[in-house]
Length: 160
Image 1 (tube, helix red, strand yellow):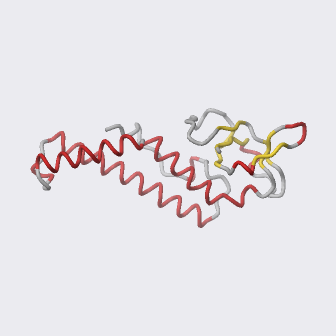
Image 2: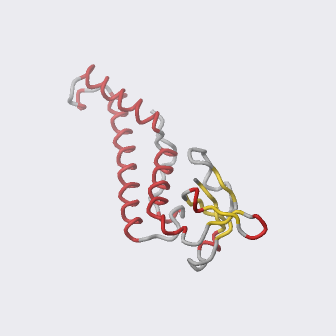
Image 3: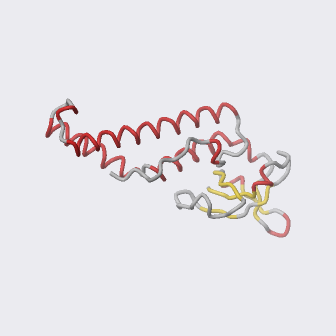
């Protein structure tokens, strides 16, 4: 599940419950800036409990699953920038280019070479996100959703 938590709450002592600003099911696309002053964190449903006055909070110990949250954040950022459908279309177009023009991209027409260049950029972006996820997972980062923890996104999504 995706939850947004106030920035100042994320620095609370790990033993404290953390109030939740908003909750969204997995798969729901939510803009990074949908809740100003809050960060997205991916959590397990069991990490969300009712606190005082019936308000949803992250239970004590929710940070124990941060490795999963890092992976979820990486996947979210990858799919936001290079959607799975675009990845599949790009792979199909590359296969068709190989069938039509051969395996040497130097002999391909300009539009096919441009496609190959875009796919390489997309694959490079995915690799950089996965490498950063590995680093963050091992480092034990406190706020996986913080933009400063991740490589910058391209100016526009890859839509091939």
